[in-house]
Image (cartoon, rainbow, N blue to C red):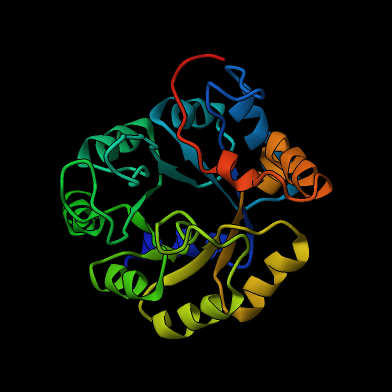
Length: 254
């Protein structure tokens, strides 16, 4: 666990609160050049304690809007030969740091990335290159969480639970695993829950179980996914809305 006063102050500012993931891709129906800034402004208006943003472009836009909230930055890049897409290499790390993120989020799973290495191998390299930044480790299971904490992650989140081959079948948060994560990592790293939280009650449950804060994205900022969940249920589950949620994106305007 970090002892850096500035890092501890930043972590404390988010304790017990809501972090809103404000993201939009160019191939989505909600995309406009300023959409992510409007999402972030809504989050601040509501009382959010932080933002999670994707890509140097969108991080820079929100930073220039001067909203006063800490920014968890990531950079999603999809390759055909791997399922690792969240800040997969140092190139993407450098780009989001230059754009102005306060916290670096990256895939810290055991999956093999586009470079032929396990994704979690990047973490110690980022820790060494950017010692003044908090690192947010996106993992999918307890083993990966413990490894991330041992390798210098300040924050660990089960963001990728449901996005690896071993967990692809799941549709909701695993609260038992969340509780176990909080117990195992106590005093080693902050657990911030991210993934599959759709109601305020579920967010409160995460805090009760010991999470430092909660990230919510799709349920707040992705109305097309919310609509798809309803359509999926009302059509008798003939289609799985999560297949759309997990699809790879392009940089082309739709």
